[in-house]
Image (cartoon, rainbow over all chains, first blue to last red; front, side, top):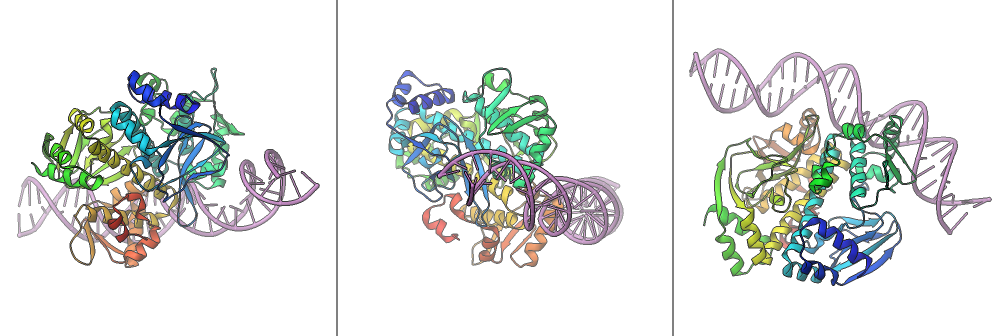
Length: 250
Length: 250
DNA sequence: CGAGTACTTGACACGTTTCAACATCCGTGG
DNA sequence: CCACGGATGTTGAAACGTGTCAAGTACTCG
């Protein structure tokens, strides 16, 4: 059992009620591991992959380029995420995937996954559920970019990223709300639909209000309540377990 | 076999290769039909539904309200769409659903759907695929709202809506590109993240450029090539069949 | 040490929102 | 049949948020 198996088992166990048999099937799934450098294209638009990727460690992002040279980041992914699982049932990739930091990834062959799904309906349901949560996050981002002004939009992203870090067991231990968020300001802009200049100024605004600190890829949330308030943040869309979710409820 | 069965069979056949046995199973799925008036809430955020909805005729929209009273429309749905199919594997609804026109809908009980999925993996795959296409559309909308200016954004929506209408067999026959798109200008604004005033002006711009006509809920695309160009539209994200898709390719 | 990338700042331009008023359409009841 | 009311569409002017341009600083990596 590789580190990838471990990460995948943990994630799927949280996504559904698996039997011992299901777990064994996952554990014996062939996974090819690889280590990737930062800022590498992992999958490109219009490709027709025969395998999907599991992030085992590090951070990656999915995005889409516009014809006129802009791009929109759709999501930041951490250990346990399967950013292009959709390709299991959609021939053509409609979004690209790149590493943000150095990543360890696992490659899951589609034929193996399909067999697994057929024999283990609960695993299939968990994987399906995973893609449904991605869609839910997309809906929230659409709402974020479409309806909120820069400060709220950025605050919202920070709230989400901290929770996702925490749930993946990656936030720093202790009282304070600290996690890695190793993105540049231009990338923040591409995620939020704002220019890098405006990102810079909005960051200053949130910093000056003593709500967050953010540098060297490290995010600390100094005033969770206030940040949630500014963002209009409601974690329902992350579809966390009831106990986990209530910890971050508005 | 009700009209809803008919619509569902057509849709699922297009989403996957079904056997005769699969088709029979779908045909014998219990579906409760209902007729709804326009502007009715069908499902609300935070509900925990035990059934999903199939649009059999008419148009509906999914959306999300912001805490400060704005709202973002996530998608417009027509015959064959299952706008809250996600609830099959996500307990809590994170988006609401309302009718835009009078609709005939079919209610699909989750327990029946789960049984169907377990016994008919190809049907399961088709349903899963359907939710994955929704997610893909979400990604494109996020990109649209985040990166494109008003005219391109609106042009993009019109391109998509015409294709979805056509694929559902709802566009008017003949050479000209005409379909029903029965939404008000304020609703357009909620879909595109623009104020109703600006929607009005952008509409005038597209009309004056002789690209579209749009009134009384009827959309005609007068210059498809030019509209696609302005929008930066690429239909890949709709994941149409190869033959159908190439008809609208850039 | 040098070069490129990220970050920061200021001034200005532009797209979009807001506000307010008015026109038009449509269904309903008098 | 017409009068009415409410929602929808239209217009103008001003305010605001965000983008663009340009220049300079500070990192980081080779």
